[in-house]
Length: 428
Ligand code: LRH
Ligand code: MN
Ligand code: MN
Image (cartoon, rainbow, N blue to C red; front, side, top):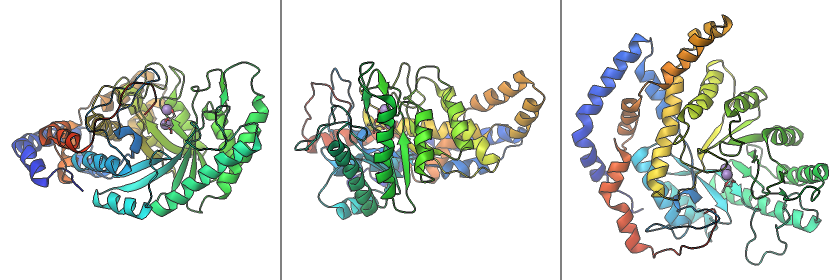
């Protein structure tokens, strides 16, 4: 695949090597004073990866307008190439998550080979029953898995089964199901019946899951249903996951909650119940804004990772799937995705620095101030040199965005890919 040359990355890194070495050594000294071994933390961070959503490499939009950038990917192969560049430079995103039918292609084994040649594998499959596709027999205007009409529900179930089949061909191990079903008027929908229909449909999908697959149920407070959404919160998601069985778990998209909801507490509850499927990382100020991870509330992202690291530290067995889910409306998506992947990695690294024994002691002693200071101490540690070292060791760029800009990749693909149409609304 036509990515960025290894020589270009080396040339970018060369003048910065000395700084990274010195800064890393200095950070190592600081951490040693806190009885933390920097190399151990580095190895843990190096083993961490977050998936790229295939739809994230195209410029996003709102329902008002979309302003495409240069060299927009034309198809799933172009998307994979862009994902390959992200992984090549930032080295934190070894997998890609596909959305069907947006990413449909005629030869899945060709796609699998293309991914391998870009150094990528496939993460969870995402189904789409929130918009109608050309030629579709039944409309999802009034719902999909929960529709009052049995034939529409059957069509939505069949689509999910097709996603599982495609995922099997690609080596995926999970299906993420998010539905927009709900209502826009009080009285429009019978709440309990709609949920029952959801369970009945979801059970059929669950029954088709291979033994080593997971079904990840993604909740969202509102949009497109602005009065009531069937799977609107982690409570509904949890009830459904419990009913379906052990392979069904709850996926937390950070933007899918009301402002001020304590997401890290939800994460803790789901871990305790053995029902945390994983994450869609993004940030928000108002709702499902799909802003870049950590761009508004990096401390909240850290607090989510603090729950994950605490649980792992305490020996809880769980295996969350990590993915970015963002809409890049005003930036080059490749730059945003690299920056966000590094931000997620940063939050993980910071959470690894929390003094767990001291925190346990402060909690037991009801010493609120010391407890919160311990979290702040970890969060306020600048782990940049550690992250740079992780990238360097893996063959990536010390400064991914600078290396990307210097490579001229966007200008190059703009010459190969015709300009995309802008105009009307749409989420991707
Ligand atoms: C819904 C959502 C869900 C979809 C994606 C495009 O808002 O977060 O994950 O699959 O956006
Ligand atoms: Mn999502
Ligand atoms: Mn969303």
